[in-house]
Image 1 (cartoon, one colour):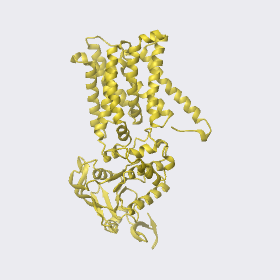
Image 2: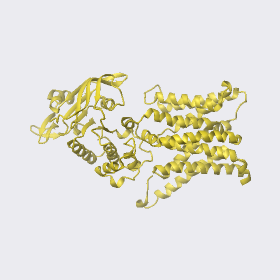
Image 3: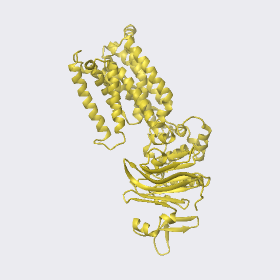
Image 4: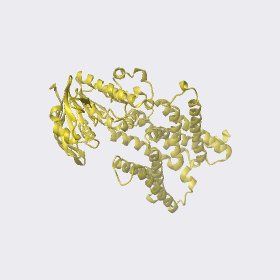
Length: 276
Length: 250
């Protein structure tokens, strides 16, 4: 099995490099109750990538353009009482972008992409150059996250006071969502919409349900994401399963484990119960 | 009694709102040692005014001056916080400073609020009252000249509210100017020496001492009688007059 797994070293490396930053962003999105923002951005990235062949451009560039447009539109409408509630706007965007993606792909020169590829990407097609691009972008996004982590926390926790204190909230938000959009743009063709969404949400949810400590949650989410990527890829090799779908299921395992741990912990004597 | 301290914030003919004016013609001067009660019903424009004073919103008209280098501590409404983030109490307090210098002050601020034992506790696991105390500790972390509190009595129990009012009184006696935004008349105690009574729906914007703002006619128009400003041993305060000669402190 290890020999076969070695053959998948580039897909595995690619998904690992993408998983770590996405799991980091996922903690913020989960805690800010922005889970649906993440799937809408992933869908926007996919629609942008699908438009590449019509625009004769690099799919990563068009994906980034599409996510940037959606981020700008969401930021502009934030806090305003608009035509629809915020979550309804996200729902509409998701549906429209999904439809646009399918139509663009059906009309593209490369022919129709099947549903599985839309949802789970094409991990098996990952080559060394893809991993390098992911590494470079991942390192840049990681550096911004490392330097701006405290600002991300402050503005996510209390944007009003952060502004009073002199944090440039709009700039911090732009750095946060710009980094997320960039990471989704370079990984969307490999991961697909559903696997991107799973990497953003499931590891963060597992880590958050086990701990209330900042370091434990961020490191735990990334560890859960990395472990699930290795496990899912290994399972896909061993049982001849679609890799993306296998990783998605593997990402649910830490959450299931966290649920069991919470049940056991909460069923103990009151003095030993701990809430995260 | 107004201490007549240094001028910290001046509003002259200020209009506030989002795009169109919600409140206009606001004239007020916040001095060192002032204790302002910014009072009005829900939707009166209190939070909009405070955000303008804090610099989050720009005034739509008029002049708003802040003393150069003014340090402002702000305690927002608890409902505006992303309170499920995995942050410890100490981390929340430390986020009240732009840089990490001053960690000892964080300890000092926590101790003042009786939170020493909770420094490492997850903020998300605290009660409403404890969270409010943490937010005040975070504001004090900056050693502010002016402390602004937006409805601090909301979502906290009576004991916490009482302790908070005592703390604000003590801080004010130490020289910190307080801007207390509230719609609870009961939070306007005798320690409050300046009142800003707002009501955007009525176009009401009155600033002055308790005696100047809470005249019998205005209180009667707003509350239908029974509410009056009475002189107590520590100063004037609002009270419901129940029977002849009897008063119930608000």
